Image (cartoon, rainbow, N blue to C red):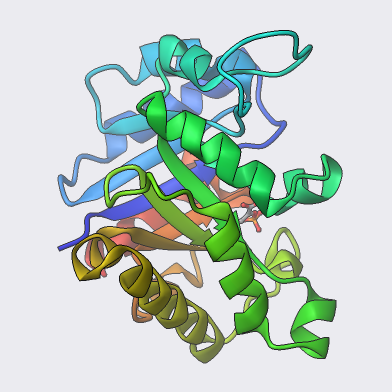
Amino acid sequence: MRRKLAAGNWKMNGTTEALQELSALQATHSDPNVDILICPPATLIAAAAQTCQGGPVMIGGQDSHEKSDGAHTGDISAAMLRDAGAKAVILGHSERRAGHHETSEDVRAKARTAQAAGLMTVICLGESLGQREATNTLDIIGAQLSLSVPDSSTGENLVVAYEPIWAIGSGMTPTADQIGEVHDFIRTRLESRFGPGVGRSVRLLYGGSVKPDNAAEIFSISNVDGALVGGASLTNADFSPIIEALEKA
Ligand code: PEP
């Protein structure tokens, strides 16, 4: 039985006053069957972890370096995230793949280091609209999955997020059949690579314009164990109904 997971990616949004949203989130939810993860900007991680200490909300980072330390100006290591109170890290988000030229091999190296440091890794995969129209989406996702996920992965330290690039921040979402097809495919691939035990225990999130009004439908799709949410995770008012839909799913 996989625990459900509602994950929020705040991206480059939020200063100290945004911690109020976390306090409100903490006060609203306590369903033991649903994990909640918020990934604020790096500047807020320590304070966010403090705010959420002892409560149901886990804090995570949005990226970490493949090396454990060294001369990498502006970067952050997995151990630093842990030290600041993070329990997880998002890796391979399409905005980092596009804006920072991260390849799937880079993502795998980062994930290996992050898992060794004790972080749960949320590895993102997704096709562009051009790729969906021109090629077989499952080929794209299959290649990203096998190259991005390290052999050190387990049901505890790996979460896979399917995030079609064209659905992120656009208000467009794939049909339920399209989401189900990709999630079933990822599950099958994980089972054949890691065996049924691990393959069935890895949680699969859908991400891309998840909102309070479409969350229940998305959570009813096979092999969708939760969501990775961008814009609608920034406020308790928007994120709470999504978490409630997951609690009821
Ligand atoms: C994301 O960037 O991971 C994301 C899913 O964003 P949004 O929910 O805003 O589409």
